[in-house]
Image 1 (cartoon, helix red, strand yellow):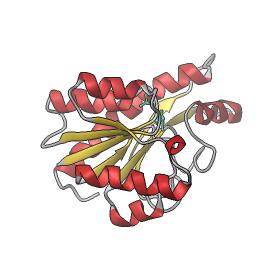
Image 2 (cartoon, rainbow, N blue to C red; image 1 turned 135 degrees about the vertical axis):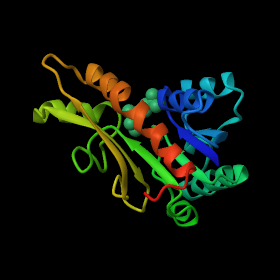
Image 3 (cartoon, helix red, strand yellow; image 1 turned 90 degrees about the vertical axis):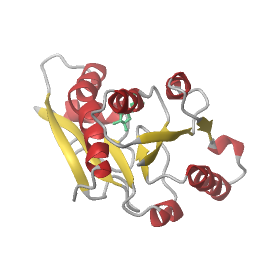
Image 4 (cartoon, helix red, strand yellow; image 1 turned 60 degrees about the horizontal axis):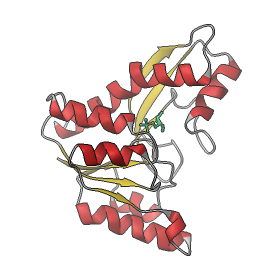
Length: 197
Ligand code: GRF
């Protein structure tokens, strides 16, 4: 199974996928390309260090959103992926991409959907809202991407305890370590094995 991983930031989820392909816990899968909308994303360095072709397709380089959307779709098509993995990709996926890759785009979100998700809920903000609300348990979700924001069918979830004294940064790190870096590679492996999800 050929996958393209889309990133915007540090790339710790990308690194988890790279490591789990290398140690065999993700079977029959190779990363054929990494795409970032952010030229300064550390994730691009992780891809290059792993010998994976990495490209930046930034909205800043295009006159209009339509032009950017077209360039993004062309950039993905060039790799002819079986699956597209959104690993901290802070871009609204163009409708034509959702249609062309129906049920072949998955996303990791750092909460137990339907809590703390949707427009405006991304990165650290999710954990700030979880702490503000005072939840005792949070976690992460892998889901298919449809035309909505965080609304696609859920594939896997994993719960993580919220501890006294947690800051958004501490909680974010725990959710990554105890949930995201586990369920995203697992979901990819399940899809590679053709499991009914
Ligand atoms: C992760 O928490 C992911 O759930 C969210 O953005 C963050 C990206 O982290 N969508 P990284 O770039 O994989 O380290």
